[in-house]
Image (cartoon, rainbow, N blue to C red):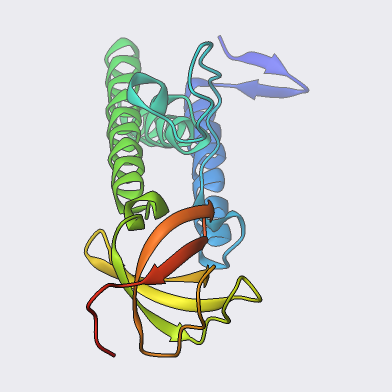
Length: 198
């Protein structure tokens, strides 16, 4: 017997349709926001892991507890259930199949988000890896810590640009230097590279 809520008789078919519509709407909105650059395409993790390192990226099993993963569950739960009722499937079989389809997509989305998080983490540049490396002056560096210039250095297989200063003599553009100390994540102290030629 249909359940009447707010004057609407909620049959199983209508319930499936509502789940598909709600989940699909969330997925479409998230995709649209990502395309327009709102929020940079990040998802929301609905689980707060007590004792975690406070990171924003979902990890492991708890990647499932995100808006995108849950929206995927409801979308495919609703679509499968709607198809089952429309084709005259047994109600129990329909519920089982729709729940299975929802969880399958939920697991897939959670796994994809976890892989994306790992790829982003591996791709992040760690400025500390520039310490001790040789670099080339890109913009002249005033001597005696009188101002800042720019250097380029190869870090983690790619060329990065950092702000630099020196306690020694002025370093002209093109000079080779050694990165000796990091004062901020994008500012380093440099010194002339011994024996280097411009």
